Length: 303
Image 1 (cartoon, rainbow, N blue to C red):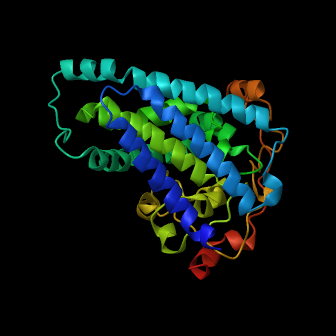
Image 2: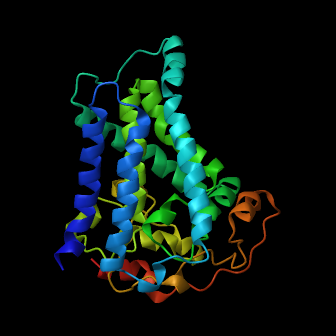
């Protein structure tokens, strides 16, 4: 079906182009990007029902109110951060750092550059979150999900989201990126999360060597201990090739039994408990055995 091959690139680049077009309007307010984001969520929900990867991951389920709470809180914090950008930029400029951002470039080119730079920070913060205990306890909230669909890509502990955002946007702040560019990177991040956790049965072809969309990212969410420490890239997969953490196999369809935190089958499900959980005394059980399909040999065989 043509939609399986074309949905992801059309969705990402189409909504990104729409965001850039909106941002070029004179005196545009940041909140106007909310309308295309709501539209993007709706489109993702429809497509996930037309070409589902796992049909039982669709629809309203007991975890849906929790995912709505995470999304509402986290996106409100994102908007607040973008709104404060001008103040932060003025503070940094006052320190005497030279302006280095290529303001003369077309806005679309500036956004592409900013996405690549931010992706380095996103990816390194993500990688560190699997190596540093206190960061992992915050990040574990996101890994506790037991199904993957576009909207629950926004399911993150707000403190961890803040840490990731700081790592991603600090270089843009230091380089003097304007508010419009930063807002569009934040907008693009939501579009990417909808694709990265999509329940659409995508056929990426060679694009899986470039973009960290759902067929690649699902392997990062498996519950088998360190075996899931793969595919950390947020927008792009090149960083995983440099880190030696790239993984792919076309021989297994990830299902609910593969997801979650293998050492924490008792991880809380409701929103309030998930906010508190990182500050409780950590507990764990033995990780389940790594299945054969998750081996590096399987990755090589999967092409």
